[in-house]
Image (cartoon, rainbow over all chains, first blue to last red; front, side, top):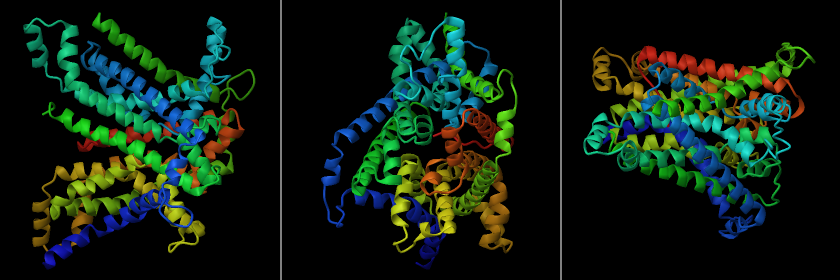
Length: 282
Length: 260
């Protein structure tokens, strides 16, 4: 019996740390979301989330996350497929993977600066488009501090993440499957539609969920890019923590709780899909 | 036909990634009217606030790595040796920081450790520094744990431990002199990733009001035109350096952190 007691002691520091700096703070917010200022149980805060301001912030956040996840998946998939099976020289894969490793971690404030310097009002691409092609993207209604601007910026870390995750899955597609399909008379389109995509589907859906969560929780890039002009959820929560802009602390906890629910569901979808995908990757 | 599409995807994607980098570099050189110069870099590098915040963040990053190693290596080792049934639980906890947004975690810190609480960490500067350090260690936890656990999987932990014990080594000695050196490559790759994450971190530092590099960059971005581009180039170089070294190490030691 003494042995068991000793064994538990070995992981005590880890659990103490996780409890103090991860679990308890999060629980505190979750509990706060279900309490009124007197500390009694209530659902009023969650009902308060239905206010138009908060609903619209969740709506635009979810829209941006969906768009950047979808585009990130499509473009990332195209690039990964090009490298794995597209007949381009083999040496491209190494640098692409290395670059993806770097770029998927290049988020936050500097990323916003990079896009302001590129697509801002006096950015390089904006100016070149005007001088070379006579296209004034700002006159056409483009604005970096908008839905599309933010989506375009998020793609800089979304696409590389997709490439990093989907490349191994693409490499897991066995040559035998393709050959078997061809022997049975399948065209390339049929092979993709009836063999490859169904196998890859869990991976694709799972990665999509992960990318969604990834951009939903991003604060720094959006804040440095738009200040507080675009009220997406993390920006609003940021303002709420700094200065109680909702004028109700418990509404802030409810909002944070809503964020956990969204990212939690997305991550759950990722884990479930990943388990399914691994069935084929043995 | 297939090859054409492949090249098209790579060229379009490549342009998307290259243009912002070129744009940023070009913009950072534009400070002097009519010619390219390094004025923006000179201005940034001579700013005492840059030096103060950058060294603050470097120090925080190093401490984060130290704390991360102290927490993760003994735990991962112990779980493999004695509590294998606990592994899924530990793994789940280490993945939580990827699920719970950092802004929510730090919100919890502010509420839990405020000046009227049992543990009023936010009351003093050093207390808040400690809190931020622990916050960073949580952010780094998923990467650190995965790296170390992958490293440990290449060792026969049980035999190594028994051999060391039969030679009379204690636990501290086993972990410090035997396990740690053996997973050093894995630890290093986790460390560089943590460094890259911590050095530019914005949300936690800003909400805890600490003079870190991330909030400094944001402030400069709101007030200046060309310096932010120079900062972005510097930050990108730091990230690139960290990840480059990490990949080099993982290639040398043969361990690799899988992306989430």
